[in-house]
Image (tube, rainbow, N blue to C red; front, side, top):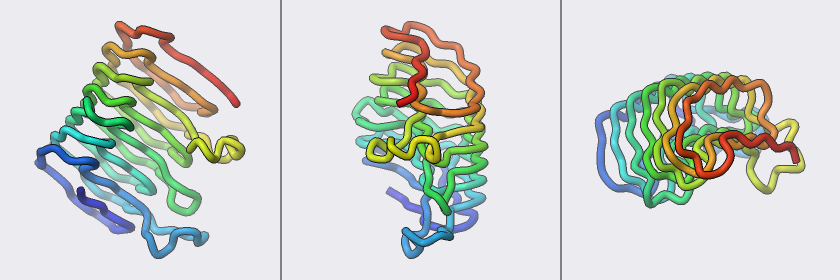
Amino acid sequence: MVKFIGVERPIFAMNFGFVDIPVTLGYGYTTVGAEAQKTTEFGVIALNTFKVGTMGIEVLGGAYNAIIGNVIDGVNAWQHAYRLSGYQGAPCYGNAVTGNVSWGANHAYSFQKTAKYNAVMGFTAARTRGDAIEFTPVAHEIGSLESNVAELNMISGTIEAGPKAVYLLGGRANIIDIVAANQTKDAITVTKE
């Protein structure tokens, strides 16, 4: 696993294999809990293919990165193929996530707190075991839902087979343009707790 922690312009390209979590674009550890946290910015994660154990590509406090043309086989993953999340002071803003494939993960894409202004376009999510796309705050933070929602994201792609195409728990002002087929439960569920 490679973690880019609070750095600028990282490149992670043309890798393959079986790993627990292949790559994280994250916030700087030395500033956790402080008001101003440094994000990982202006990076490129491209043309990788991995079979994963926990989750695939994680943007956890990363901004203005390009995640392009990756393939995540998540048949063993109990989490997400692609996660977009952050924290106050280390937001997940302005990432371009284009032309990626998710196969068999619990969730193809998870949009969590501070995920804003991201474009997730031209993806394929196949055979998910849970919600293909989920918008959710971290479970222990549901009490602060209004300040933690994923909002102002653009999502466009195809979803093939799985229980549910989209699950929104308090997401706000997101544009979702999908083609979904063979869902065994609801196509879209919207909940506010």
